[in-house]
Image 1 (cartoon, helix red, strand yellow):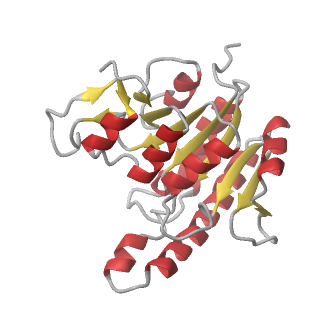
Image 2 (tube, helix red, strand yellow):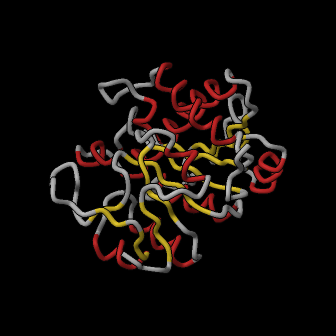
Image 3 (spheres, rainbow, N blue to C red):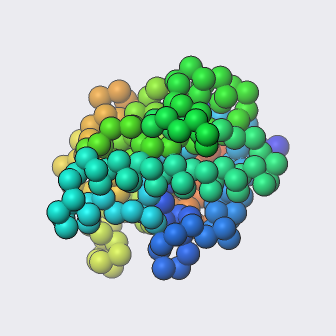
Amino acid sequence: MAESVYQRVLLKLSGTALADESGLGVSPTMAKMLAEQIVEAHSLGVQLGVVIGAGNIWRGREAENNGMDRSTADYIGMLATVMNSLALQEAIESLGCDSRVQSAIEMREVAEPYIRRRAIKHLSANRIVIFGAGSGNPYFTTDTAGALRAMEIGADIYLKATQVNGVFDKDPIKFVDATKFDRISYLDALNLGVEVMDATAFSLCMEHKMPICVFSLDEPNSLTNVLLGKKVGTMVDDNNVG
């Protein structure tokens, strides 16, 4: 059986990956489909950590634009990520794969508190670890939380699943002539102002030389193919070879 070229990875998912066609709420059907991809990838022998957003439940930026305090809006979003984490955990474990949810905001009745050494122990024991509540701090996105957790657990790569299959010079949803990069440097990605990940997350990965693979889960077998070292999406690292 084929094995992953990476030993440990951090997968960042959008909350909308759990949503129905409206883009809202948690669809058990979508959760199961997502879990199937994750469990299949995990079967390749990789240690897998997951961070998931909350866009299917809460849009903090919209709340802030309508007068809500930014910190309050962000904390609500963090709580929503725990809801998504629990839904994903349930779907993963229904497929017979062991997992743990760790929350950066303590809520012991539903999740373990985030403790780095405990998370690494779970990963080493072949459990999927889902990190909820972002970084536990307002003013930071789940993209940045994903970058932070990737560094903390010693991941080999940060896998960013998006709606588009890689990094483009402009929005491929709006512009049919958008050009995709197979590989791009952190600095060039920052200078382009690409919207697949926020600048803080890019900068954190650049400073600590954490490679990023940006890809779409909508592409067949994309997550498995990334782990097998196949050419999928866009690789963001120190080298810019176009």
